Length: 174
Image (cartoon, rainbow, N blue to C red; front, side):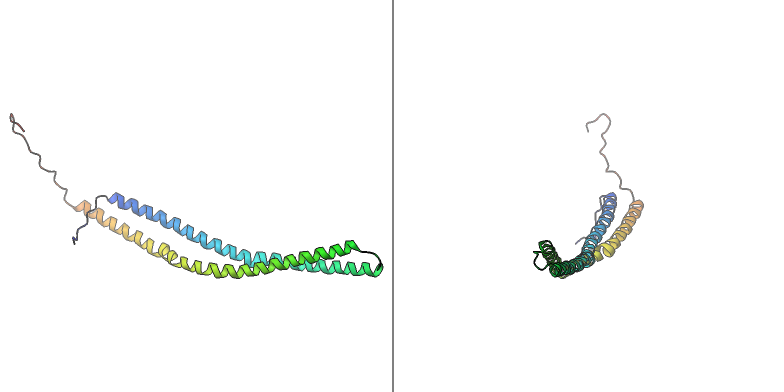
């Protein structure tokens, strides 16, 4: 195996180094965006949705208690009346409370499911964060040092003499 390397263009190495720097920047942004999206979704599930449906459960529990109280009062005042309006209000509140409780169960289930699925996937990004954050910048630095060394070598290397052209003698054929 030969210990010699033939470099035909230092400019190509410089262009590659510049492209690598751009790649690192874009890859870092993409990885941070992915991690951010997962964290935002987790926060949305853990706080926003839990709070929303928890408030809905409280609201409809209160509305149901109030509607039942109104139905009870209406039955006391006029036991023979149908009190259809109050009965409909109780049924509506029961339906809305059941819906809010179901949504709360679904959110709790999804919080657990999301956690179980997202956490292992985020862990798979750790090596990529290491490569993009540590290894590739070291490679860019090393490549820069190699480029400087090659440029210094190219400046010190003796200029290759042009190939000798055959000269023709005056008056003769080439």
